Length: 391
Ligand code: GLA
Image (cartoon, helix red, strand yellow):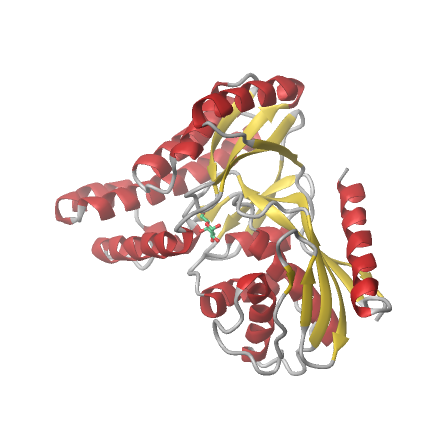
C-alpha cells in the first residue's frame, strides 16, 4: 500500500509539473508525516520522544530555475504560492505553506552554503493537514532533500532535520523542538524511533506484529497552537530555572516535590507533566521491547491524563476521542498526539480487532462530540529521500 500511494503521488506531482512548467522535473523527493507514540512536549526540554514516520507523504517534483522560485501545491485551497527569490530572503517574509520551503533555503544560506538554487516545484501530498502529523516538517524535509540534491550539498538527513527545526524557530517563528523533523528525516520502516533529543541518539524499535497504529483524527483543527505552544515552552524554562537545572530533562520528581512550596502552582503542574512523561517514554520503550502491551496501554493513558490536566494542551474533542478509542475493542491504549489544541489521538490496536475498533470508536465519537472523526491506519516507513533524479 505504501509504494502504491507513494508512486501515485509521484505521478501526480510529475504530471502537474509538466503541465505547469513544461518538461520534466530534475529531482523528485518524498518526506513522510509522523505520529508520536509517547513523549509529548518533552523535546524542547531535552527529553525523550518515540515517534514513527508514517506512510503519508509530501512529494516534491522540482527543477532548478532562474529567480524567482515558483511553488505550486496540489492540495485543495493552497495552489500557487507568491514567488520569492532564494538569494534575497528575510525572516518571516514568506507567509503560508511556502514559508517552510523558503525557510529551509534561508537557513542553508545562513549556514554558508553557496548557490542555494531557485526552483520551480510542484507539491503533492496525502499528509492530512491540521491533524497533528507534521505536514510542515514533512514539507521542510522534502524541500531540504530537493535543495540538497540540486545544490550537491551532501547533507545527511540528521543535518537536514536540524536545519528544518531552525527554519521553524527562526524563519517561521514557532519555537518547536526537533522531534517532527527528526521523525520525518530519520524514520525506519516497521519501527518507531526512540530519540534522545539532547544527544540525538536514536534507536529504532520494531513495532510488534499484530498491532496497528491508528490515527484517530478529531477533525477539530488546531487553534491558538503557536502562541500557547510558545507559552508552554516559556513555563518549562521557568520551571527548569527554579529547579536549578538547564533543562527539565535533568530534573526528577523528588526535586520537583521538594521545590513545590516555592513554585508557582501552574509552573509546578507543567513540570510535573514533563518529568513524568519523560519517565513514561523510557518505560514505554522497555515495555514495548518486552512485549508488555498492558503496560504500554497504561503509559499511553497516563500520558493523556497529564497532558489534559497538568499541561492543559488537550481539548474536549481530543478527550472524547481518547475515551472513545480506549473503550473500543482491541485498543491497547490511546492518547492525544502532537502539540494538542485539536488534531488527533494515536491508538495502538490489535490488528484482528481493527474493524470493530473503528466502528465502535467512530460511533461513540460522533455521538459525544457531535462531529465525524476520521481513522487512518498507519504503517511505519523510512524517512525523507530522493525518489527520482535526472541529475
Ligand atoms: C509539535 C512540535 C514538536 C513537539 C510536539 C509536542 O509537534 O513541533 O517539536 O514539541 O509539538 O510534543
